[in-house]
Length: 324
Image 1 (cartoon, rainbow, N blue to C red):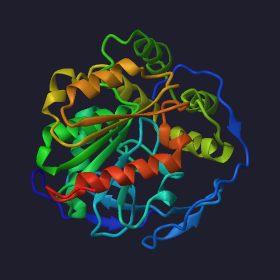
Image 2: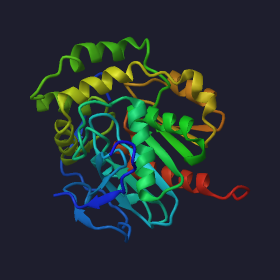
Image 3: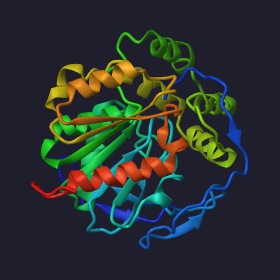
């Protein structure tokens, strides 16, 4: 019945860019620490690491999301949000580097991966509402919320609307608005708004590879392409067209939670000027610049990203008056 909360149910599951040349490494193997003890894991085909099995959860709005939940259930929580047309698999290279002392909750957002694909509802406020409902379903009163690119606006929106539930936010490849950004408007108008089914895999591959500045394993890129192809063309269109209308510039001062801004100095999508806008507009923010990195830092530098994330979650979640 409309308006009557539904009990959460769990069940097992059966960035725009301006492309540039990107190097892809095939078969590259990286050392990795043992995975957290909690959760079931399956071996990935890259990095020599283990990645967790996802489960599903149904929110009060009856939307079912595919998500990963790893780490100690009583540990400080972070919600990791992928960018548009990705999925929870965006964090395949990060999850093995997170300790059990951090509870990582990694959903595929509505319209993405194996989550539900409603006919509409792909604006920033819709995604941010889902974050709150997911936290409700998992019994979380507060969490650090991370967002990559478009989802950095989701993290901002959540922090603005839910200050009491926001332990902190991490903004990766972020911006306050894309209004008036001619490059973004041109890409959406020429490449995204005209998308129809079936979507060409080469288009998705170019879209994902176009934001890279460092090599990533070929198999990881292949995973991103497969996940991107799960997203219907109508979701691409509505999400990107809506993204161009969002503007948090006047509301940045309303973000009171500790904020970590992460940006790569070879980001071909979002410039340093936007980072300065965020850093000056959010009172409790700090900016970390990754030298030599592109737009998706956690794809290229998963170890460093994980270390920075863990340190921030621990600081943001510490009791008032307690610091390292």
